[in-house]
Image (tube, rainbow, N blue to C red):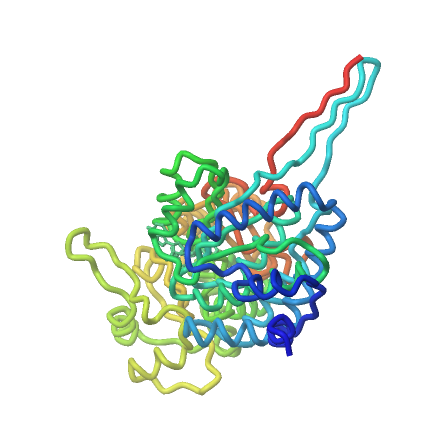
Length: 464
Ligand code: NAD
């Protein structure tokens, strides 16, 4: 059996690469290189080929193949990511891969604007940047690679990924899967590339490379800051800490169920997941009781302080809290065992009552721990929710039947995503209208990114 057949069998894909020598070289790497300079050079060549030899319709064919490959490999991808990162929940990771495969926009997202009249014709097209440098997180490593690849290829680009070192094997697998899918329907090799060992040094080469005009970073604030110092165009998708307000007009059963489902999804890894709740005091007991019927467990003050010591560390110099990364994305049962609380095996979320300034409220934990704060009215709820969101311009949620309260919170919190009476994932098209993304650029304002955000405007004029 030839090497190409072996690799394609491994990935569950067929290939039509004909040249055996080329094919063997290609299948040795499948877009994953030892040296970052090779990864960039190959992507530059691939992108040139893409623009010269292929049409927009071809790009759509490649994207369709990527979607199919993702759906075919969704269990394998979920398993690999869980195995490598040790964070999150297998079944939720399968769902995230389904979401990204089905609902990430392709070339249909690109629109051309035209003006016609007595003086001629002017057209503004969405043109590619060329090669994009993309930085991806450990929390959605393969989902982000697939989502970015679909959007960036749809827009006519190639992409070089610098994934999180803690998820490098999963990122390499996704890159290989994407290249296999593209080549299997006649596309160019290496439209998507990466390095075996991504580091800060490889990222630095990407940032400084002359051919890379656009950087797209998905992850925490340190990374976004680094990219913004590059002097290049940056799409920065940074951290969130999404608050939820529940007022006394809300459907409390619906709120409790949705909040627990959203907060515990993939053990709270997604940046959009519900991170803290502000509830009107006259409906707080009812909300908590309903949460307890949805696989949540409540812990007391003493247990809450034990949990704090376990998952947060105080920096001596600044007295700021930082998360103990060892606990990110772990199952609720593990925390409870550690602090000596008995709980059923299927417990999904730990709730605790705290004040508005508690470190669990103010810190993005990415753990299935949900602090709940009682508030007296909408003024206090909005003030506290804004303080918790910290102007990250990311996401916020509200359960209410009071239109004035809903409108006021939406305007005042001014986040990229605002969901009314549904869980966080509705904000990225799950169980709701609208497309999906795994790169929510609140920091730089592109918002729910899609193919069009990876394009430049190009004007073509026919005068007279
Ligand atoms: P992280 O910031 O530790 O890592 C993200 C990426 O940036 C990785 O590739 C990492 O190697 C790199 N990186 C880390 N520090 C860097 C620095 N100082 N300079 C340059 N690069 C650096 O984040 P993570 O733990 O992998 O992911 C979780 C974080 O990402 C959370 O804060 C979450 O809210 C955020 N996130 C945001 C979005 C979004 O769309 N806005 C999506 C997913 C995750």
